Amino acid sequence: MSRTYTRLETKLIHAGEPDPLIHGAVSMPIFQSATFEYSGEARYDDIRYIRLNNTPNHLALHQKLAALENGETAIVTASGMAAITTTFLTFLSSGDHLLAERCLYGGTYDFVTKDFQGLGLAFDLMDGDDPGSWERKLRPNTKAVYVETMTNPLLGVPKLREIVDFAKKHRILAIIDNTFASPVNFRPLDWGFDLSIHSCTKYLNGHSDIVAGAVIGRRDLIERVTHRLNHLGGTLDPHACFLLHRGIKTLAVRVRHQNQSALRIAQFLEGHEAVCKVNYPGLECHPGHARARELFDGFGGMLSFELVGGVEAADRFISRTNLPTLAPSLGGVETLITRPATTSHSGLSPEERMAVGISDGLIRLSVGIESTDDLIEDFDRALSNT
Ligand code: PLP
Image (cartoon, rainbow, N blue to C red; front, side, top):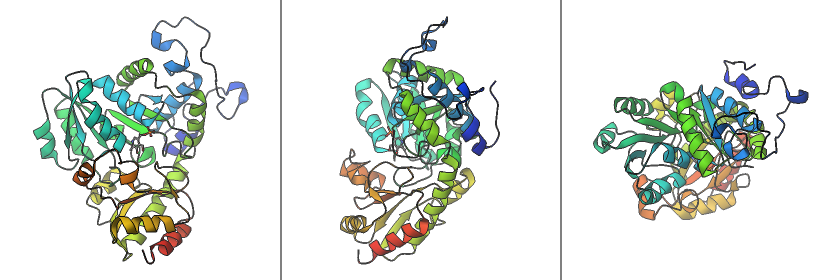
């Protein structure tokens, strides 16, 4: 029997769990079996086989993820990039055109701007807060508009309501990468998006120990993504499914702590004389603050900032901090610090980075669940004499 739950915290724990429990196991067991006994499945996609993303570990996750964002169903993938590229390759065929936001995760930006052409796909980049540019760039062959809930690494908040209206008006798909917000802070399908994509590597898993992705949405759309994924082979291994399933259960407590901690850290940095710019949608000075307040339940655990002394000051500051680990990626329980120009956005040329506003000295912080006071004390000490 599949039960429905209303509140997010309860869905995180109970949605999609086997009922009755398998041999009474309170934690979902790992089904490490490549293939399963045939029981009359009529369709290729229903034959039970790990690559076809339908072992009990996959199915439980699909239900849980769909419940978190009020989608009909979901599909998990081998990584966030597998979710993104498979979605593009499902809904865009040779000759089609994508409208994508200018400031995207580096891997997505690279795929769109460098790999699309060889696949016969066209694209235009647009500004998430300039609807006029969307209309100007729309083409008869445009099939979808693609944005991120908060842009990486500048934490811009696109005009998400208007993006949905625009997509509906022109009968194209509205697709969003909701990784930075997580289902705790934003549920895109409730606002009219057709598909919500996650790098589950980040907040959903939350422990920096797997890579995984997901696409959530209407059943007919997810069935098409699943069919393409089954051919491309970007499946999530059952053991990684288990770890993701376990990590998801604590999502709400982790993300709520991270929301509060990141806001306090952003306020501290904003008031420090060595800091010249802080990008965090929870700050009143942020250009997208009013929009973020209207759309989001929390402002997230990510922020970026620039120091008065540029790259040298940034490197000095990073080397003096004790708590954060210098590493790309985000959304884990530990605080990570990075300079996007050398990691997540190193695939972009310096000119491309300048065009989207990513300076070489920009520092990105993924706030973990350590004591906020300890983090602020660490940053205060590292900032003196940068
Ligand atoms: N989307 C965003 C916003 C990301 O930050 C990342 C990775 O950093 C990805 C997608 C890609 O995810 P993965 O590394 O799981 O493939």
